[in-house]
Amino acid sequence: MRAVPMPPPTTVIPRPQRPEPRHPADIQYETGNKFLNGPFAPWGEESEAFDLPVIGKLPDDLAGALFRIANNPRFTPLDLDRYHWWEGDGGVAATYIRDGKASFRMKWVMTDTMKVEVQAGRAIYPGFVNGNDAAPLPAGVPPAKNVANTNVGIFADHLLTYFEGGLPTEMHPGTLDTKGAFDFGGGVDVLCTAHHKIDPRTGDMLFYAAVGPNLTWYQADSGTGTIVDSYTFSMGCPALVHDYVVSEHYAIFLISPSQFRIDRIMQGRPGVLWDPSAVPDGSRFAVLDRRNHQVTWYDTGVMLAPTHFYNAYETPTGIVVDLHVISRLGNPADHPDDPVSSHDWFPPALPWRFTLEHAGKRATGEMLSGIAGEFPKINDDWVGRELRWGYFVTTRSLSPATMSDGMARHDFATGQTLVIEGVDGLTSPSEPVFVQRRGATEENDGYLLSLWWNPATGLSELLVHETVEFSREPLARVKLPVRVPFAFHGTWAGAEQLDAAIAAQA
Image (cartoon, rainbow, N blue to C red; front, side):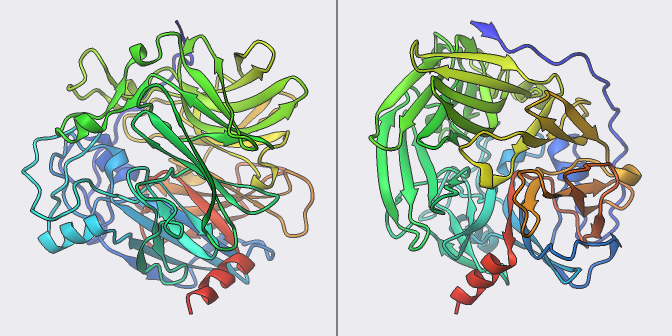
């Protein structure tokens, strides 16, 4: 099988010296583990602040809340060297914007398993990526940890945090107090993906659960939050299916050599393996027709894994899928128990386009850009239909200290990718979130919101960029009172959606 071509050689940035803590909550462990240093380093307390300092001006029509996940270990990990970014305790960092002012609140997600560790006053659950030698769990506690650390957003007036190893956890959208597990009115019993899609026509949530070799498709009603459709099919292997995409009529999954081995995790061994033997003919697209539950397979002929998807849309002859792909993801199957470096485990991803041809059941792919990057995002009102613009963070430097190093806008019509750097030394931008300007009808008329790390202060800043011009200088820089440890995903809730969700708590 052909491998995904790697990006050209890039500059390796030396690791900076570990800074002295600037605040009692600024945790600096004595370890060379990248995922416990720099922008990843934990912040040791819950925080809130009001009337935050702003450089520039927040747009008058920007009102609502940016909810961001924070991967924030609450206690010292059992093994500092084997700790992995995917295992950090979930927190939510919310920046509330209204009338040109901003306030902030950050709290941990108090899942049942976090309550166990809080009561014990220490970490007790082992890691699932690199594994470690943990003591047996106390009697009666949940057997696996729900870290609630992958995504967060409002659905059906509920603020939900997501993690693929358990059910979503609900929080109050204003106070961020944890309310408990959310099971969609009893319709989901084990877990669900952190990467749901919202149907722009109905507002329904479209999502799935991958458990072992089986994948179950779900649709939840936007009004009641209950399940209105589900269907289960076999992937043929316990593939790690972290993200997917939908078109107008289809749900599209890429089944890859990246395997999620629960059996190994329960043994305290690394549980994410890169195993080409699981898909011997190459990675495959599974396409579920949401109208009749028919599943059709499309072979790529290459060994690759998806990281995250932009979008998909239908043509008269097939489906076009835009995503970022990676040449491998996980521990090598031939020596699975030895931890590997972060860039060997998760090398740079590249933007690709696949065309799924109905007639021959083939998937042909081409690389869209040689600029390595992650966390692709679009204007979510364009989900399932042809669009022109996409955004992502760049991962060009192979830095031992950070993951992302810039922000990019890709033009699917011209093939041009425009990259901007951080102002005043800001770096390590988070996944961008697109917010459409109020009253706008054009796809790219809006704002891009992202969190950046300031190495000089050790803290985070929220940057608001204008998307049409898309220049390095942001419209506004909101100085946050904490470092939001570098994490995965987040969403924007407009003022109307936020106010309705807060009112529903009464």
